[in-house]
Image (cartoon, rainbow, N blue to C red; front, side, top):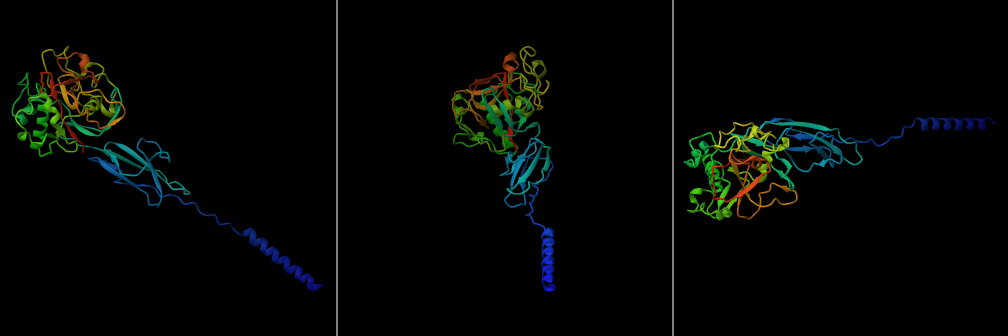
Length: 363
């Protein structure tokens, strides 16, 4: 009897021990890991030129999503795959994701770009706008704050063709499209820059261009442009229009900088006797003067209808008889000075209401 009671007591003790062990045993769950936070290179800060920003994450296999509009990044945001060009003041936010892991915290980098443009030029950050037919995206560029003056033309070309000559701070006029192309190349060479334009097989030095190259309007088809060089050139029509509208700061004005033409333009009603000194009317949103009135401005493009469909950095039609002028002039009424007005002219034509404005690529 005693032996049996002893065995029962032993079994009960073992059962109690097993139950206690079972109750105290903790189930080990797999720990959910967190993705490392993204890092930026170069880091947030103030820079004097555009930056190529890379975003990295030390967690292998993680995907980075980012925003530049102030919104919190999600998996629906843009996926980072290559460096981001930062050419204006923006804040980049990034978050990294990996399946089965907790997403990283949001990394934030604010960039301030204090770009110093070439003398007499204004920096225009790239953007997208509607030209009345389609949406157009243009890259960043520098453009002359003023229409080219008689003094600036004289220094490079050695003469002043203007009908209203003797006024160094007035816009140069009575220049053809050919004249403006030649000026751009000669000034580029004077300043040690690479010229943009070439004439046929004769290269970019106007001294080597054949006699009479600029006498026949049809010869405009022989001029080509290298869009990547750092020299001076005419704006494309869409670059000009984007700048005249005020770029990314546009208020949608009828004229360049205002809905009241007299605030920003010299035109027939207030200047029937000719051109006026550049910059004496109010500038537009970008700080550009006289993009409405004073003189029409040659641009690169051949005059044709705008193409339909979205475009990026378009260079205009590939063939046609005329080149485009934009912006109106002292001898036009208000209708010719609105931002959307455009006209075509022979490349060898000139008049005392036509000049030009110069541009350089960025950076």
